Amino acid sequence: MPSASPPDLRRRSARGLLLAGAALVVALLVAGFAFGSTAVPARTEAPPFSLTLLDGETTISDSDFRGHPLVINAWASWCPPCREEAPMLERVSKDLAGDGVQFLGVVSDDTVADATAYAAEAGLDFPHALDDGSFDAVYVVDALPTTYVLDANGGIVAKHSGPISEARLRLLIAEAFAGTDRGASNGAE
Amino acid sequence: MPAIPELIAVRGEWVSLLIVAAVLTISTRTLSRLLALPRTELGDLFWNGGLAFVVFGRLVYVAIESSEALTDPLVLIRIQGGIEPLAGLAAVAAVLAWRTRNDRGSLLVWLAAATAGLAVTVVSYDIACVARDACGGTTAPAPLGFTMSGLSDTRLATPLIEAALLLLAAGALLSSQLDARRAAIALGGIAALTRVALTPLSVLGSDALGLESVAFAVLGVALLAVAWRVTAAEGGLVPPTEAAARSEAAP
Image 1 (cartoon, rainbow over the protein chains, first blue to last red):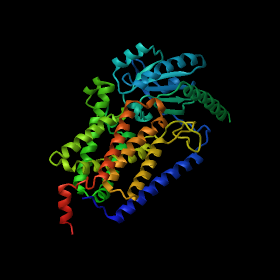
Image 2: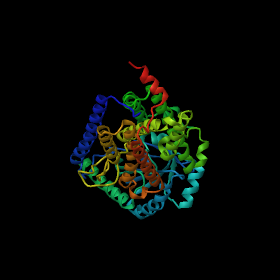
Image 3: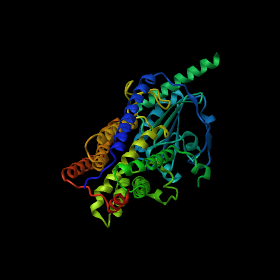
Image 4: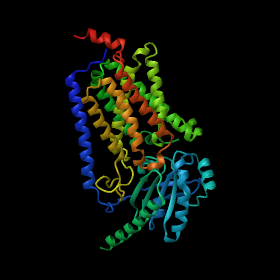
């Protein structure tokens, strides 16, 4: 015996679902036309943070990195995509060190021992700090890895959830320099 | 040990799960009427299935990625790392098997209920990407892609595209002559295949295609085959005893 659902309810449900789907499609197209510009969006100021490095002794804060672009990479030793992008991060950090670009690893949901061992194994020379929850609370790490690029004035250029390509990372760092220049000129005005 | 305020801090993932739970609860009444199933039993299935999906999916995810983290008592709470969806679906299948252990004849009926619930879950979780700042897919030129989350390039809102496609598919299936239960099973198959088709458009791109995609493809084809076969077999979906009794008792 086939099931029977009230025809009116079925018609209304079908109409509602089709309308909702169509509305979502229209909303996406409207957003595409309205926010399709590739103009650099307004920067929001990076929230302050204070973390302890994996050595367990050194404390660092956001103010230690002001004056130069900063790349913050949230990672964990058990996270395969984090491991995948680690060599690229190390390569770019060394390549751009002369330009004053700083890198900071923030270890999320991991142990000090595992993170330290992996950082040594992968040859990650830039500093790494353990997130005690305070970083995630304000930066909201939705996925691992997540990369934040900050300009020299402490403005967030971008938050990138998931693995980041070298090309995109370099692009965002270039934007960080551009943002720094804009910030400097705005300050001069 | 994290401080209590950190544990109860509003997280995007938790907000998403709350949105899914709310939408499932609200839609239970309509689904129970569409599928001609007792509302309370449908609600129980959604609750038990949802809980099994999250708990088992999370445990398997952590076991695969970092088994030593399983000793962490907070491993279930910190869901930001992820949930293994196939493991979650296996847990839902186990709930279904338990639910129909004394009445295997009603398995397809409850499968239809479960796939309808999963479709609602996928759509509401996709739309909740706005709450967890995770709508961004692969890069694409405007107007297909647009700037989001402070990024300066333009990206497809892939989760929202998936939600739109599933809403349209659900509407089309309900508009068709297909029985609501068969339509629900077919929608489950379409949802699985849509997930595979949209994977290259996710933030991870085609690199995300793998065994999981194969499993979803197999699941999608299997559900469509089930929907087609029970459509071909007249009376393939026998309503459960409880529903029949209730419908007889209804005025």
